[in-house]
View (cartoon, rainbow, N blue to C red):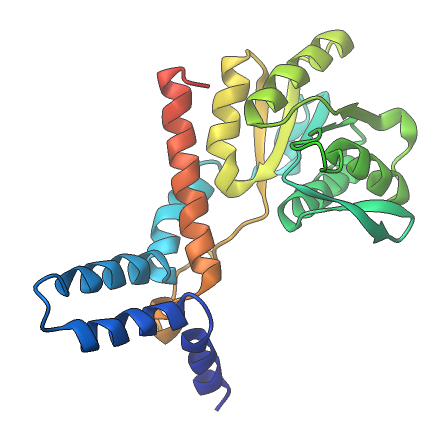
Length: 252
């Protein structure tokens, strides 16, 4: 019964309900010569919204850099954690402002690596919009609350995108004489991040976190059931591929 309810919910919530509406529109307009376009739209939205497709497009990004063993990080001199979104004005346990789920997962990995390696942590991310919270400021407060001593915390709060993360982190590395750093970001975001940091001449050890997919894709009924989460993952993957193209073409 639980499985049936979950499948039912999937079709009653977006984008499932939109797909049903498209089919209903096709039923009433099927005699029109242009009705077939409704089926094309249905097919496109459906494919973009199912796990079988979203996993297919995002997995190559997540698998590009396997997570290294801690013993492979011995030459690093700092840990760089990239921001991934924040919320301003919201209450938190010991202050104001919270990180998005992606950013929080990245930061938690940075905290664990600091505990294992005892390296400084560079929190990279400023205000994307004027009304946003500074990602580095929120991350700084959270790491302090997590027991990281202030002497290990370095804020990079000027960047607004991945290109800025790399540019301004390079400046800090130059000032602090860091020659190699552990780069922590979401697994799907790692290829584009590495491309930017390499372009800036920063020697990084990629350490992916915040995975969106299981190691193995199971092709059951849920793999072919539309969901907003899968649509988001597909959109995220397409954005990353376009970003990688932009880097290679020198557009960013």
